[in-house]
Image (cartoon, rainbow, N blue to C red):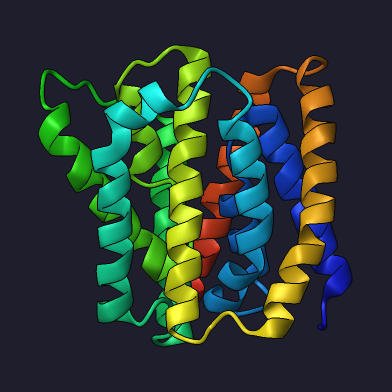
Length: 246
């Protein structure tokens, strides 16, 4: 596959971001890979590194079952939303520019919410909101390959403990990755070449994650996160404007 050096650097960087912040690998990887390939190709490369690092994140804390009992409606919503998005939008198989523009808008929304410190406040509506947020997240996953909006802001709104939040994001990202993999396979978009490269890409992703975890104690995570979000904002604007102009 072409661009192997670029792909390696992208997953190393994406893994480092995840190691420092606890999130961001799929967002960074899909965003940067979409500069040199279509979003569907980027999403196909993402599957193995994303699944590996998110399962690692999920299992690194307390037992998962209590968290699953609370969040299973959201997880079910993610699966339903991804499936529906696959049927409607062809799992990223529609016009490449449209997919790139949708990805750009998702990145802009995510970065803007983070930079503006937008936080939801839930008051007794978790039972209704959880499956709805999951379904919207799944639909956006099917369209763009990115599964942070609105899942991450919603999980932050639940005011979980720090370690619980990291695990909850790991759970949501794991389910989203599996749902995306099924979605891509159902449309014939996860071909042997992409699958093989996805397995290779896990090596720089893990190396980057380990590096990021070591860097976390030597740098200010808040400053790193702001720089990361600002870079995503610029990249999202570039993708959205490029799609609009062409």
